[in-house]
View 1: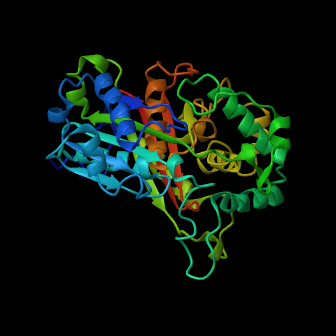
View 2: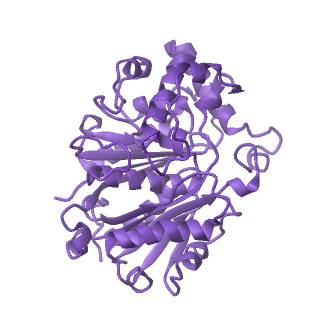
Length: 395
């Protein structure tokens, strides 16, 4: 106990097992099936022989009540009873925030082996877009849809930086090119700039291929201390350690804040800087990243907010191949949300699943060459909450 007196979890938490379902329109499975599938894969990957006894606690990310109201959703899925099980909800960052809470439990010495997982069962709701926007927000003025929120950022970036819809299209083409190779992606189809430019408009200037899709899915991670990780033979030599995790929360209603610029998201900027400080690295040290590309404009803004490039240069960085698979800093090698869709509670855990496997040189799909540090970034709400996690190799 008392391991966290310096406030840092750096190198105090190890990931020893990961699992994920295929993401997509999974009509034949419910949230319990998905949690069980992803968690069982993580248990097997970790080498747990009796997870019902070995898992000390669970944190599960879920956004919507129709997926689950409590930690009991995960406990029922895995038949792990009599242990702490906590439901975490923090908009689209719910999954990575569940992981964050699990990490602090292990780093503090309270629990030894913990499961962090996330799930969402969106497709059964039959909604044309994310449910709930009519119920949330201002008591008089309606809440804009998710595409409408992010078209603010696109329109403003076009005006301030001279970006174009063709610049956004390059993000979609890149991510679909990566997702084509990933067996668990929802969409495995390469597209062209012309496909993106000619697609139906959703919220000008964001068209169909600028928006991530609705999807079902789940992902899970087994975490412990490095000392315990050394005793598990499956990944004793290549387990991944948590170098940092940071969370920053801002207003849920940025359009009512006159000073909000919409060309950058303060939550991401602050979470990223806090994560770099904790990890003792800079943005230049990041080998690759899985970032929140709910919309193509989001990924372009993320490049800058995460410190990969200076403000206003994302379009040129894309044109020059910077975030491509073979570029200086590959981004969304998995295909991102553009190819996996976005089952809210699951996305953050899936990103960490991808980063972990990349660092272990066992990526499903494209493998980055000799990665040292991997970054995962989750953004939720109206750019409200950002979670940034940095993972690396064992010391």
